[in-house]
Amino acid sequence: MSKVVKVWTKTPQEMLDYILETDRSNNMHTQPDYSLSFYIGKDLAYIREVYEEYNGIECLTEEEQIQLGYYKLEIKA
Image (cartoon, rainbow, N blue to C red; front, top):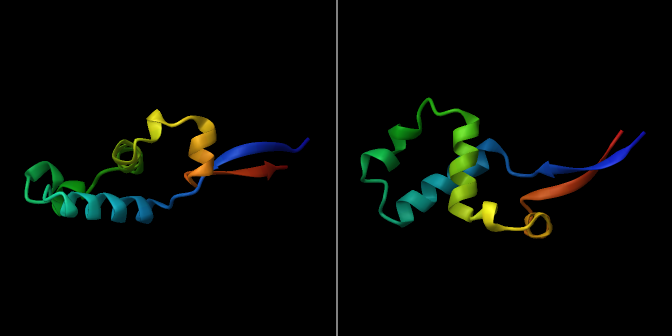
C-alpha cells in the first residue's frame, strides 16, 4: 500500500555550504569551533543538526517546514 511521507530536501553539500557561508558572514570562521578545519571529520548527523539550528527548523511546525522547502511530500510505494 502506498502512503505519503515527509522527505528531507537538502543535500549534505548544500547544508555544509550554508553553514560555512553563515560562519563566514558572521565573522565566526576565525574562532576555532567555527573554522573550516573544524568541520573535517564531522558526520552527516552533526552537519544536519548545525544546519537545522542555524535555520531555526526545530521551532517551525511540520507545515512550515514543508512550506519553506526543508521537506517535501512524496508517495512511497
